Image (tube, rainbow, N blue to C red):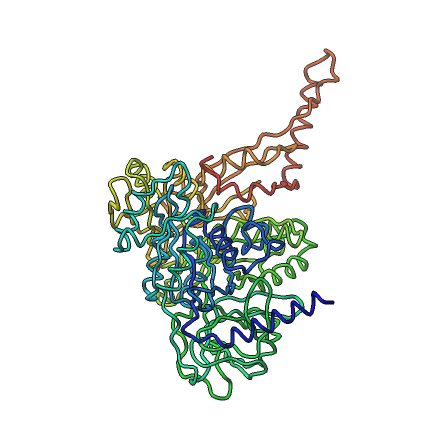
Length: 620
């Protein structure tokens, strides 16, 4: 009982102290870094140094709450946490808005950056500057953020401190002494980072007397309380019980609870200008809360929406089907629950002749697809079959040359006789690699229909290559092959640049003369013959032998472009004939032949699950 009273008193004191802190004592910042540059570990050390976590609550990668995040060493969902810090006798509130490091989650990064005034740029002293770091840095500079460069992992034997510091100086145009050497593992440089956050990052600007204007930078789903919205107040203030409005959806709600984000949520009566907090309104539909939206007062709304809001657009599409068709409804429920935690997942029902009922899903990229598939298996115990991923194309018919026909699935492509043209999405790909691997990286990109647009030497050892490439070419095995040809030294980042006309054909795969729609793919005409042949060869290895021959064919329309045959298992029907007339043996063999012919007409071919993803590993 005494412990409970003490905890309540500490909490009340902290609220009183915090209410007395003015806007000039608030610092909002994010951490931007490439995957595996020590971002999550550095966040842990900042929480330790500010006393935000107790010894009992401490654990590695504290802000990475999913098992998947811990295993893979990546941040999938952005998190926010508030820290109190006393600097030179004054109390400060530090709001850390954590960001994912992978290119697939760049929209989440952009919204987190928009909620801050400063950013810690973390660079690994052993790996130097990577493509994703540069991409997120430009994003931060566009938002006029104060950049604090931090050179992490300086304690490693392979650390190249002086050279990487020079790289950062060249990139940012700062002074070498402004780069803070640190080690998140040992705690070196943490006090210097906290001092730099307070001294270099400006306090938030905003007018407390204006109408409420708050930016939503994240949302999570709580099964008991509905959607929890994370926001940053730019102008005005948000109070408990206030009637508020979400501007993008136009819907109004009551603020049942507002508060600040620590390791646990702390309810407050009011969140003022410049501060970061959470909002609970009892919303059950994730679609009603959009990251990047503006929260305002329902009675006296703000005139201006916060710039930069856009609906998340899926880049990669794939079919997800239950292994057992009876589990379709269960899969739907699982997908809906998953969408509440991950609003960037888009899905619509579809059916396939080969796989039955399932869903056509849109993902931000291949990593996003892998994460969703793994979360379905772990969190909902749903084993699923994923079809060959593809991108969204624009088709135009001869009848209506200006009307766009959206093609998310190869089966949506109009008939070749009515087709006018097809456009496919292109991306600007940025690859940073060592100068030794420039030739092999360029060969790979040209093989993938890339056109080089720029080549810049960042240092004598490091080169930045820029290509215009079709998105469809990087969906399959591009990233794995890039790591192979560069011996792991290349980093990759991309951004969409629009649609371009392309010569695409639909390649169908036929098993036993029946089209398997789940294996169909849209391919460039120049690559169709090679890829069609490789698909047939791969399927011949994966499909188990039956009592009859199984022809595997790749076709463009009615034209067969490749064929392989899975030979029949043959029972030795003449084994019981010891000697005797040859006509007896021939009679048995002819009978077997007729049986196999009949069997082939009525026989079904079982396709193993791995065959549907075989296209992704054609070069193995």
